[in-house]
Length: 227
Image 1 (cartoon, rainbow, N blue to C red):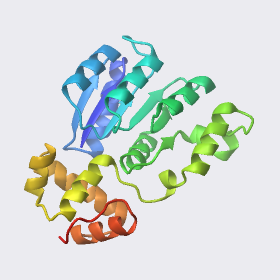
Image 2: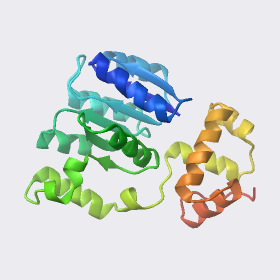
Image 3: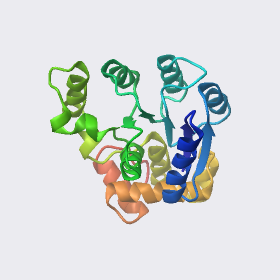
Image 4: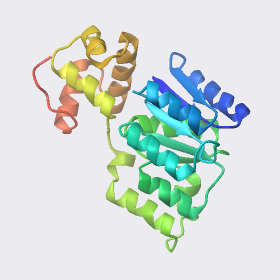
C-alpha cells in the first residue's frame, strides 16, 4: 500500500502516520506539511492508494489545491480530514471529486473504516454528515449527499475495485504471475500480493480463479483468458 498524508500540524500528521502504519505495517507513507510539499511529491511519485489531506494549509487556496491534486492523479481517491464543516466547502469538495470527508475529531477506527471503503472503490463521509439525525433535507450539501447515496448506492453497499486493483486482476485473468504483474505495473511483488489480498476480501473469494470469475460475473473486469 502507498499513502500520501498532508497536514500542517506536525502532531496530527505523525498521529495519522501511526494510525496507518498500525494497520498497514508494510505501507509506504509519504508526508507533506503544506500544499507546496504535496505538489512536489505528486510531481515525483504516483500510484498512491489514497491521499489524505487537510484543507486549510499554507501554499495554496484549498479549492485550487484539491482540484489540482484531483486533476493530476484522477484515479487516486482523496479523503479530506478537516476541522472545517462549512456547507459550501463540503459541497465544493464533493463536486471536485473527493472520495471522502472526515472531521479531525473522527476516531481512529472511523478513519480506518473510511480507508477500507475508499480503497474498495466507495465513498465515505463523516458520520456527522451521513447519519439521518444530522441530515437537513433543506440543506444544499445534505441534498447533494442524499443524491449521491441515492444515485450511486453501489459505492456504499456493493463490491467495487479501484483502478489499480482492476489492473492487477485483469493481469491475473491473462494468466500472468505476480512477478510479471509487478514488472508490468511498476510494483513490487509484495504490493501485488497486498492488492490480491484486498481483492479477495472485497469479492468474498479465496483464490485467483475465484476472483477472476466473480469480478467477471459482476462486470468489474472482462476476462481475457483462463488462468
